[in-house]
Length: 185
Image (cartoon, rainbow, N blue to C red; front, top):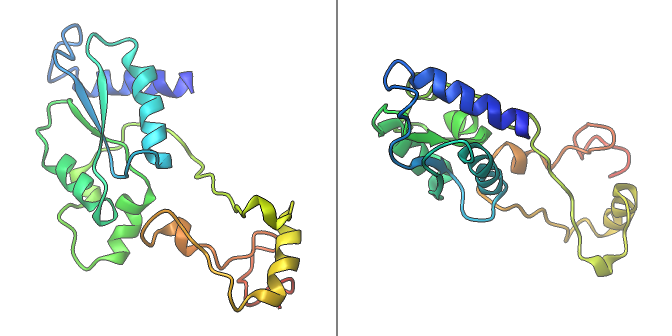
């Protein structure tokens, strides 16, 4: 994590050195826009990054959550922000890739309006959780439990359709569609 924070800080300084003297940047707080609500995984990672990267700066990095519209509001805000090095977007796959195929028109173009600075997390950890009283301790136990009751089993997610929420019908054991997986049939 410390290495990633140093990488982001180094990249940020290199990108903006041509526009501002590195010794004076930042002269005001830096905004790190998260396209999710407080407590979401993207928000938590943005806050960890802001805290670590902000330690070496004379001004704080402030995380500002802009949830809504599948992240479009946050992406649009940053795309229209002044290119002065004081507004960053801490994005996920939804805003940069999934929204391109989910919406007919976007008020931003990921390829034209944004320049990548650093990959902070190359994995998107996901988990399958159940009520503790269900007494299943593994995915195989859950499948064994769910198979006879599948007519009422439902998947829930923390947001609107995205890569993560759309990927549920794939069996994590055999990597096939749930319909084609022998464990679910």
